[in-house]
Amino acid sequence: MSEFPAQAPVVIVGAGCIGAAIAYHLGRRGVKGVVVLEKEPFAGAGSTSKAAGGIRAQFSAPINVQISMLSVDHFRRFAGEMGTDPVFFPVGYLFLLSDPGRWAAFQQQVEMQRGLGLEVRTLSPAEAQALVPELNVEDVLGATFCPTDGLGNPHEVTQAYVTHARRLGAVFRFSCPAGGFVMEGSRVTGVRTLEGTVSAPVVVNAAGPHAAEVAAWAGVNLPVQPIRRHCFTTEPLPFGRADLPMIVDMKSGVYMHRESGGLLLGLANPEEPPGFDTSVNWDLLERVVEPAIHRVPALESARISNAWSGLYETTPDHTAVIGPPAAVRGLMLANGFSGHGFMHAPGVGQLVSEWIVDGRPSLDLSPLRLERFAERAAMAEANVI
Ligand SMILES: Cc1cc2nc3c(=O)[nH]c(=O)nc-3n(C[C@H](O)[C@H](O)[C@H](O)COP(=O)(O)OP(=O)(O)OC[C@H]3O[C@@H](n4cnc5c(N)ncnc54)[C@H](O)[C@@H]3O)c2cc1C
Image (tube, rainbow, N blue to C red):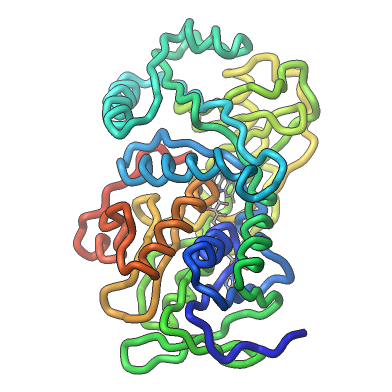
């Protein structure tokens, strides 16, 4: 193995989709010798490997819509630029609303989303059913549909970022946990590992569910908690067609999209305590399957083929923290994506690299500053699935 680098222009802690995207975009902007430290033996072994692959811009917070739209632009060009198989499938996201208050809020959001340039429309229950004939819409008041939302392949995207970041001069050290920061006063000047210490003027925290622990090395209180989330998949189904949109039933919270000819089903457990347990809780299966069958009765005969769980890196307002913390220099946060880190990775890679190289990102990321929590200026993202 090559010698441990003593110095780097930027060190990134974590090689998930976020750390890999930042490394790639720094390389594209001419920063050579970026060091990425990853405690696992390969990239994307953390939450990235558990992601359902959903990509959408239908958020309630404008900043989340904007980062998604930027990311979708990257996803569209991805295969051509990176030389991969297609990684993005714009099948659309169909949100189904049954509660009058929620439906009114979604219609208002559509106005905001359209104002930002998003192609999104409201549908009647009959129009939603025309899109997906298998749906039961008897209790649905309306729906929203965005055809540029869709599905992506987190593994392929992350591996491509690693390959191209390396080509552009980045160094990935796998099985190499970061163990602490070197501090000079309130400035982070390097990262300690068992293989040695690497000095750098900028260190990026891209440690996913472990982000709070990494930030604490600099005395930064980062409110990111690991929360377990599950996915269940079915065996192939007659309607598991390639262009089936992602369906999100806001009444129950259940979401489903095609997966290997069948469906992937997911549902948040509101009682899930924070923690690093990623064992599968099979008791949840019934709670997922029941509302899924209500919404798509043909699922009655479906057989479950697989299940896994992973960790959301959740903030109190379900929105990321991006940027340098005010109290510490030399540290950049890219954390707390709260279930939408994969879909935001390309945009975050671009924006964080701009911030490091140009001193500011091309999109105003001030709504995502860490200090919003202390200022009580947090704007909770309502469309969490
Ligand atoms: C079940 C499930 C479904 C999901 N579905 C979607 C979806 O449909 N769409 C979507 O956009 N998002 C989804 N997500 C969320 C998405 O997976 C995450 O937001 C995203 O992967 C976060 O990426 P990351 O790079 O920040 O974190 P990670 O992928 O966890 O990467 C962080 C890396 O840091 C490493 N690390 C941590 N501490 C250290 C250390 N001290 N030293 C060195 N390395 C360290 C870890 O090993 C890890 O590889 C889902 C998540 C789950 C669990």
